[in-house]
Length: 608
Ligand code: GCV
Image 1 (cartoon, helix red, strand yellow):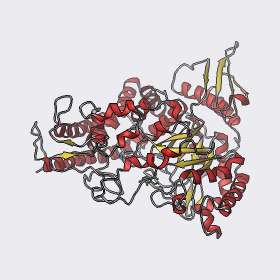
Image 2 (cartoon, helix red, strand yellow):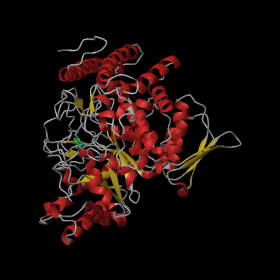
Image 3 (cartoon, helix red, strand yellow):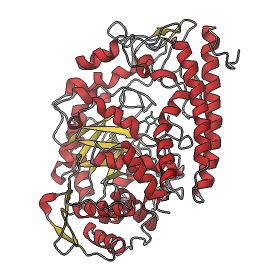
Image 4 (cartoon, rainbow, N blue to C red):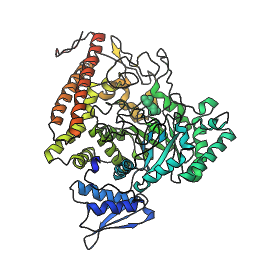
């Protein structure tokens, strides 16, 4: 089972040790009739150039890993039955193309929907070498080059990765090396305290010294470790705030320790008050990241990257681009996406993400960020992603991280072809269904950008007021007249964190794009949308349509000739999706109907 690489019949042997050896191995099987020659040009780094020679053979010139990426380019074109496009030259847009796994040492995965960890079991690293080679191949084939293997919530005994477990970690790093993949580790900001230091204050000399010595030991064992990933002062994690320091103090202290080894500190900006009193109207959670970081612009060391979730909340179906990604011009930034379908259907409901990512790029200049990261959707299920069709998100994430101008339709169609090799009409159907899946899911879940409304903690299925009187800052404030929070200057002021042109686009409910209406505005149910419908009618319509469309999607999808075991898994998950869609539709419509007392203009069934 090798997902979109099912056309590669030979497993990568353990003897393959370098990217160039891997490139030769792969090419020899896919181009047996043709000589493909390789020349390493270190100056090309991760880039490659492919040319046809006068004798008709192909030649790849590239840096150490560039050769491998060039080889996969040729191989995927060939497996797609497309003419190999040469001459071709390509360099990745972002140097760090990262997958963040939220795997715990006990083998569980926070927000994991595809089984247990591929790396950990019973408190220890114990990967299956064959699966690591399969995974490495998948990631390399789409150009991904950094894998953070442990949860950003660093629970004991994950700290041991920097201590007793270093040799096993070094072995894992070696296993990924032929695939051009470097490991990264999530670290516990308070870890020096495990060694008897009474504080983790980033300005304390003993703490600084501890991190320097630790970095020296770690990089000695793993010379190509990419760096450390840090969640600090967030959802109960330790951080610099406990010592009256800011996050530049914290990140720069770690950056100094890893700098001699070329390491980076990827510092997450997911910082907000997760103990908010729901009665407190002065605090608006989406404003938090900006308030914690914007004033520090320009103060971070060169080897610090701030990793910012794409939206200001937390991976909802529809959120605007985080203002931090537009406002910190003097800071290295990474945008964090989430392949794990935490709020987007748990890898049960179909949800193809590339259309959503492309919307983010409509407002994000490509050069504002220097790296792209995604929370992993992987686990030890045979098909790696739980739902076989969820693998499209991993594949397209790789393409986007290499080249943000990747076209959604072509990318998804190629994934379909590589994975299933259907006839053209069936491939078109599947491509279309996948591309429409996000919008369908959006229609039957929380309306028009309001987000949340999910079952608390688990985050699957509807519960309109599940978080309403809770501590997490995620309120909709629906009453009998109106719903939403005013985030304009007249309201919480969140919108003021954006540049002028974005403010203008969203500030007036009359002109604000519909799908963001309830993210930015508090509106009466009788508010007239631009198409003439009332807000409440639009909510009802979207939900009925979402349910109908998911039924139509199921019918078309289940008629496609998927092979087993995928066919069975797809059927089983689609049944659950249909149940979920109906629950969402009926519960959201009933919720708003009971509050507003306004009937559906079309007289469809809503419960009293
Ligand atoms: C790893 C959300 C998730 C948490 C996750 C957190 C984060 O709150 O529900 O499981 O923790 O985001 O991104 O750090």
